[in-house]
Length: 107
Image (tube, rainbow, N blue to C red; front, side):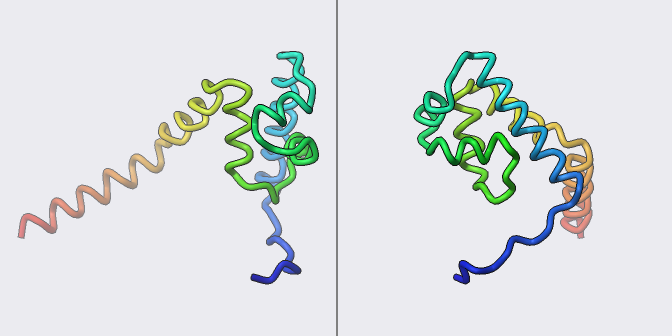
């Protein structure tokens, strides 16, 4: 593994979403009157990692992001899962793929 490799550039939409998510996590932490140290400990991460997450650092692992959501409130994690599950475009593609398989199986 090459540790000197630079990450691929992100789309402006992804960069904006990461920045917004980081700010929302910070706001959720502050609304709960949690210090950086408290939330980092609950999530099992370092304070430095939490600061990076709150700034929208794109190099953090998704698992760290999800652990922070869980530490804030399990319902936040559930909300992310539900949002992905309600993907209308993905559902249409799945239904179309299943229909194509069904038609092929008729022969």
